[in-house]
Amino acid sequence: MSSLPVLVLNSGSSSIKFSLYEAGNGSRTRLFEGAVDGIGTDLGKFWMKDASGNKLADETPALPNRSVAFNLVADALQSGKFPKPAAIGHRMVSGGPTVLENQKITPALIDEMDSYAAFAPLHTPIAVYIMREALRLFPSVPNFVILDTYFHRTMPEVAKHMPIPEEYSAMGVRRYGAHGISYESIVYQLQPNVPEKLIVAHLGNGASISAIRSGKCLDTSMGLTPTGGLISGTRTGDIDPGVLLFILRKIAEKTTNAEAAADQLEAVASKKAGLLGVSELSNDMRDLREAIADGNAKARLAVDKFTWTIAKWIGSYVAELGGLDMLVLTGGIGENDIASRAEICAGLGALGIVLDAQRNNVRGAAVISAQNSPVTVRVIPPLEDLIIVNHVLRLLGGQSDPA
Image 1: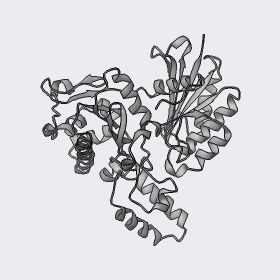
Image 2: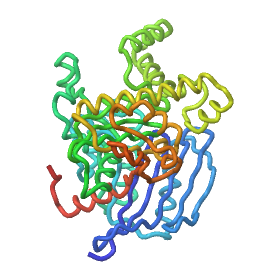
Image 3: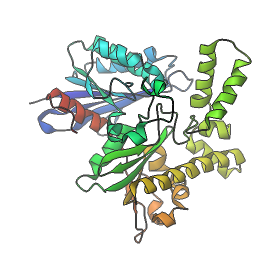
Image 4: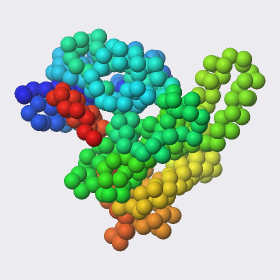
């Protein structure tokens, strides 16, 4: 096999990230990467850079909707400056209860995933839109869906099953998890010495944590949707269902339209809560740290809630794993927020987690635990695009999913 350009399309709730890899002859060379951020806001940004980090584009366009945003990506891909992709891999948060395996995309498969948009309401609409556009733009190029839920397929039934009436379980309501491609990339980078008892926390605007035994997911914090689990930038995380019922009843006092009431409740739980809701300021940890330095009590409470909740989940997963060999922090906050890492680990000495303040005073990949810490604590940036490329190559070769 000679040249084999593989395009990766990674859509978020308000962003489209993309990269092109040369994957021929066993290589994994990134040719360029870029992103469209701030879709639907007044803070639109479009950037691209080559493998050496040289800027190819750096713009602040109006991005009123996903169509305008993806047209920027499409124009770049069809500019003639880069090789035409031989295959395309799409990140998908959740394919619902019927699409659980990474596979080739067809129009019928897109429709099937779209029918379960409620399982990832902030992500699925833009993801399926991009898939349809990619099939239209590159009709002869095979497209593949790579699922965040795929890594979590090894969870035991006791972790997957929700304590709800069976009629709803039969509809596919269970724990699916998210950020699975990120978790898989951490395990990939730790090979061949993957710890038996591993906890990985993916901490960004969306935050989750997973217990991993011998490289396979044992449990994860996000549930049916990415709204569950840890407090995130704008999401509640796990919360007393009575709180949502209380809010729903308050919404129902102002509208008799059930669908509108559900949409409003979803907006509260997914877009207005979390760090933003508690601080009443921002969902960005950098803004909150600046506000804390200025004495903002609500920002302090929001961040304390974030780090306190993560520490609790680490403790519960240590119990589940029966001990801990390594804790890995990843994602934008995990990689860059020195204070959050310190605050999360500050009270975990009884679990064998001891940070070294000097080692922790760094951004990016590092071992940040003390020399005498029984548990190794590492910061490892995720390599999601590389994992997507690996899956695309496996599927192009006709290989089945590994057990």
